[in-house]
Length: 73
Image (cartoon, rainbow, N blue to C red; front, side, top):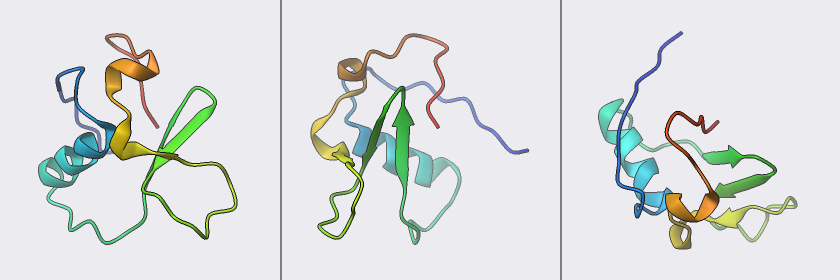
């Protein structure tokens, strides 16, 4: 298993967190992604998506109720 622990400001948008993850893992952003927190899913807007995926660009980490040590899948 590969994991990284990073620390980012609470006012980061989820989309910005995605860009940070891409950079620290040296990934090329060539796959779809989403973040699951509690019962909500955040990701890039997609008009063809059948499930409800909230737009990651307008949601800051502090707005989703994360605390220090919480995990985001």
